[in-house]
Amino acid sequence: MNSTSIIIILIISAFTGGLAALFFKINHTNKIKLLLSFSGAFLLGVCVLHLLPEVFSNPNTAFYASIAVLAGFLIQLFLEFLSRGIEHGHIHANEEGKFPATVIFALCIHAIIEGMALYSGHHHQPKTHLLLGIALHKIPISLVLVVLLLKQNLKTPVILLTLTAFALCAPFGMLLSQSSLSVQIIANEQIILGIALGIMLHISTVILFESTEHHKFQLKKFITILVGFISAVIVSLV
Image (cartoon, rainbow, N blue to C red; front, side, top):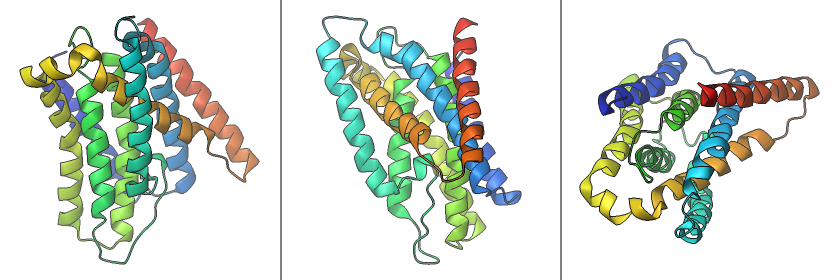
């Protein structure tokens, strides 16, 4: 798959959720959480089946990769402090009409690192399974983002501009990782891939382990997670 196709997939996935929230008013909390659960389970499956083996495939760099994974956890903790947990469906509206700059900043940094991971590693080739996991995760995230912006009563042009900026962050990260400078500095030690792995492990596990008071929904969530895991395994076998 070439870079243009990857960029198109990343942008379409971001706009799919965002435009659905904007024009079709999709903001049902439980449905969003189920969508997040599926994407989180699929992403965790991709991490375990593909990223973990690749990050630790070289014994000479395994220690540095471990540090990178831990750094990814810490980075995501800081980003969630700024975003207030929007990555796993939490919507906390501020003062009406106020632009949530820190939330957008955190989401954009997160997306850039994910995009960089698409070409990081030993072979510097696009990771199709990771691309699918990121694309699936972007749909509910962009949906939640637009719901938040709507709750802030921001104007439609501002929302569309913000959504566009978010949609372009992952492609920007991917293009950045393809540059000769980034490959020379970071790719040999699997640093970016390890950081992205830590971030995605943190996000996916938080999504999966969040509890709910409604046992009926908990059963739906369990089934959704199971389907996400099975989907990741099937895609891996293709």
